[in-house]
Image (tube, one colour):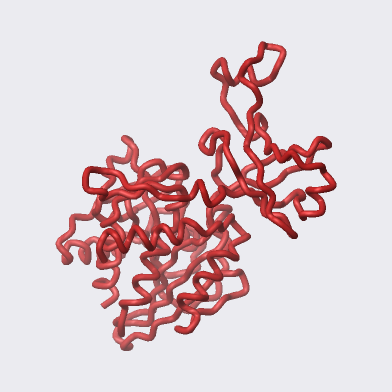
Length: 343
């Protein structure tokens, strides 16, 4: 897959708002693309596609989570402002002041994340942030300029999700040859792209393969954990992003990353070696990493004993859970690696 096609695919996926647990937009897209190929939903809201194998290998699940980090309405104030809290690993200092959409039960309401005026003295609480204090959701609100009655009529209430609107979801290209994509929510749209490409190209793998687009990964991987308790697969590989940071030694580039361990569990060593060997067979040089403050569908189901073996393959990404940056060729390279391994 060339870079232009990859960029177009990721642009379509990033445009779909899917705050954790409210993932109807991406579910509808998956149904449109894969519904005719046997896509189904399970009781947790995961979307699954089974590809029959040749009966010459174990059954395998590949997962990519379809939810994104976001914010949730905590309460509606008497003046129509809305207090927000995190739903996943979202921070107001990452989003910054700017538009958000409140996904009401009846209608979507536009709002702006606000921190208040900067032309203030110590009499105003904003002064502490100006002078160098940390900024959290307690320091911010969503300015709607609607009355509480208006918001109630739109179905905006505690529990309503707040997401970035379309105008803040447009990816850009970086680098002299445009080799990199920059956009919010590449975690985990970039992994969803890999599974969609495998659905198109994977023919008669050695064993049965189930492509699983999981729900609610960002708030505890409950979708994958539900799937792990119900599945008959012997092994599970999560497709993910891998955070680049000096402590990890990863380079943001086109090579696949094998995540060996994270904050939830040390993963299956032999399975990781198989994935690395498949990458090398494709002429790639995989990176290996041990991560902190990170978990995946694989580590969550593995630590619970829901599958016999689990591993995680990823694409190295700058600014994870922010305005994320990844190499476009990483999508094709991880897809090639998995296709060879499954064959």
